[in-house]
Length: 229
Image 1: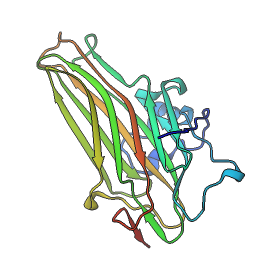
Image 2: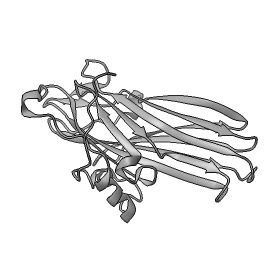
Image 3: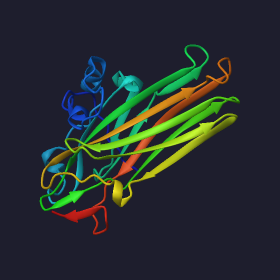
Image 4: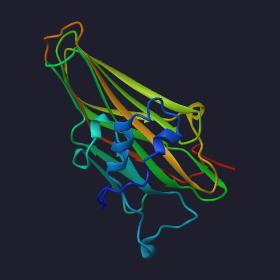
């Protein structure tokens, strides 16, 4: 991905994740976090993409792992079909603190959906690093949902110590897991990326577990990712 744009924070998608029916989204800290998250502004009129195509209008973020604007960056490609979310503070460590720790970051991706079509996300890549001593476990989970639609998809990967490496997970939304957006309108696609670190079996063991970035791509094709309304 090249020629990416990034802009400052704005409060335009504060309630987006709650519209998707995610449990706990009405917690005060999460609502404020989404309001203060990094948001990509819509393109200028002269650079506006084809209204008959699918494109990303803006992105908002919030959650324990991205509470402040300086903790996360959201970027959109020139053609507005691809995005990257970069996490600067999505990190769990052991010790200190409790043996079980968790953090997350939610992203609300606002999509323009042309009339007469429905769209789904094809793939999402999540990257990070884990150092886990023996007995310590790490769990990375990515949940996806369209706002207002009760169906969704969830993927998770387990890492078990000893482990010392970078990870790169790719989630493919199979046909039976796809959630379709409403036709001919904007739609909020929610991504909730979460980490869980479990050191119960080795509470004094050393561990570092983080997520560095997430990227995804939207495509207008005649494959199963699309269907006519």
